[in-house]
Length: 354
Ligand code: ATP
Ligand code: FE
Image (cartoon, rainbow, N blue to C red; front, side, top):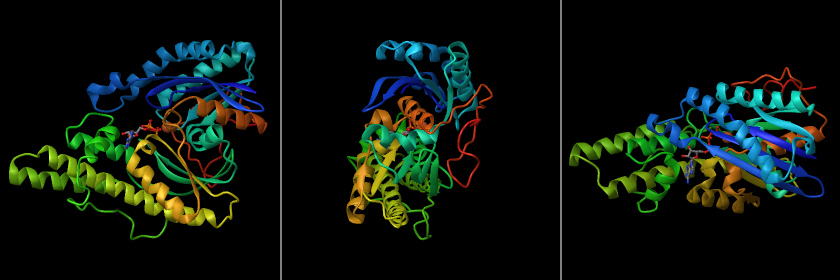
């Protein structure tokens, strides 16, 4: 099976071709970012993002086909992110996919963006069901037990900000560049994580829910205290603040992962696995903390290559392949959805689904 995947739900326009047979191959994965377009606004502007997707989508498709050496007639289907995300961008991708489907007669497959992230360990490492997934990105933070391509059980997640968002806000408070994650991590490496004792929200409560917005407020308070006393913050103050913040996020993710693992291990998986996805999985301190927790619980830890942890279309093509194999395709009534929770208990999982 060879599938073209399209992704345009946030600020990356992407197209990829994935082939699955005896072995699985990513034949092409093209990602066109928009960081420079949004830089002066300090965040993603939905309208600008949507226009950029419209401009870049067909170039990305052409590039992906050229790199893979495929033509449209070599494909079996077209998969596209149909939500959740910024609706203008999602619509741009869905329209593009419908156009290609109508022109070629190829089946259309609507994919949930979060399912794309959650199924990535199967694309990169052939992970067997079930496994535990921690999705930690700029927009999401949740634990999922992944039991099948359309079978997800959510164990908990953030009740406010996602960790990536908290990293980005922290960077803004400390006049560091965006995206904040890498900048804060670099600063943290030179800082003392114990100097500022920031809160570990919700650890006193049972379950896997998390909260990160209070951390940023606590950090702001510490920064302002220093400014009041000294009139400004030094390079060392900043590094210590970053280190304290990062340690708090790592502690919360580690403790909640310990609890999520305990719930998942109760299913007695043959080869217990915790996999991560999302941009925050790039953070070395956070990875190390999660690895330790897995070691203690007797589970394996898996972090796919970073390019496949952040937004990309290979994961969408792969999720499309899984869905195609399960016999599901969509038609031209496929709707773009701004919200689309990934849980058995929530609305029906996928697309206009047949
Ligand atoms: P989503 O995929 O949920 O729609 P997104 O596209 O913003 O959101 P990603 O591209 O997966 O998410 O990740 C980007 C986020 O990851 C940003 O918030 C960024 O600050 C964060 N991030 C990237 N590198 C690091 C790092 N080394 N440490 C911490 N956070 C990081
Ligand atoms: Fe994403």
